[in-house]
Length: 313
Image 1 (cartoon, rainbow, N blue to C red):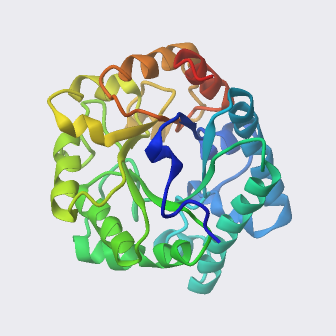
Image 2: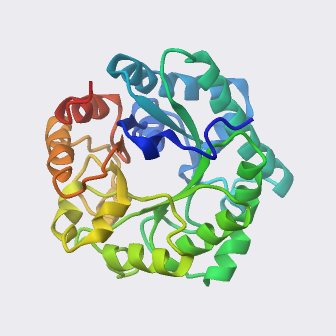
């Protein structure tokens, strides 16, 4: 049973933390091989679930110490049909992996009952293709049909919301929003940008947000930016009410471009304190910035620095 689907707590005030860079932590810090950079196969056996519990616990402990809410993201960024096929998952097994991912987070939520509150379960939907570049495009209708597999699983589960993460062109984001509308699911859209502050498609961040809002009747709860360093998009955060729609940030630790990160053989953790200071500075431009997390290269050290800099209780 969902707890918050009809009244998500982050919409009524307070700071919420998330985790950091799941896949980069598992690969570079834990030495876990993730074919196709996919973490969802770990959910299918107990050893994999133990590794995921180990990963999430430092973040949940930080939220407990800071006395703030937490948004638990399913490890399903790559758990869509094309990626699943590459990894040898049939459609039924892929559906089961998405379902198990929500159940796993439900168990974590029960474990931290009374210690971290509110705890929100967020079903994550990633791009059909590469998150760093636009190799091919779908129409909005095609994207809606393609992403309905995950949306149907999350709608039938105890997930409180869904997020379209690392979106790199508008039509795919709109397709996921339409799928969410069709299933009456609360949805968030998180765009990624290049070092010039524009989506990999070339579309501007403002243009992307305003287009999705205009076409969907402002259906997304809010927007986020992920998988980019704050210095890549700081300069484009000006010019009006669209900034009020950005509620969350999950930045990379590194200032490197997507192409450089794609070719990297070692992790670049950057400077956690500097990253925290940049988050705090962005709060002056983004008045509704209340969801604080990390993406590639970040871990619990970065989240600690971010929460310290933003004076999270």
